Image (cartoon, one colour):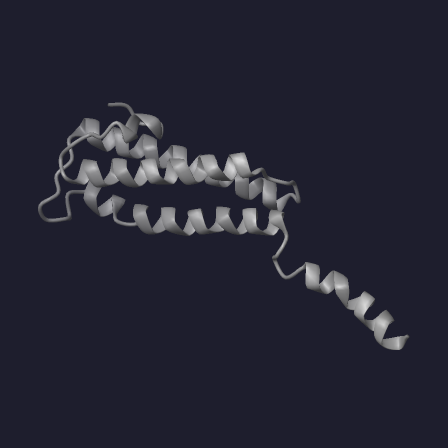
Length: 126
């Protein structure tokens, strides 16, 4: 009987291990945030012309900034919801992941001198 009560008492602790659907969605947001920061970390040097072989026009810089700001805002919105204890949806996380892929494609294209359609999808323009 004591073992059964002990096991029941420990059950809430096990639920806190991040195996719930909401915990997985929250972790997905944090993973996208990390990936975004890795992708965006060279942006200041590229914008300043400090990366050999990569030159952006003023238009491309504006597109990159707009796309990056869109990603940042979307991540911040979901992280604020998480911090406030609000649930987030799979739809919102999927949209965030899709936007990260668009941002990655946009940024990679801009660095090679093209402006991919993905830039328009993420909030930049073409």
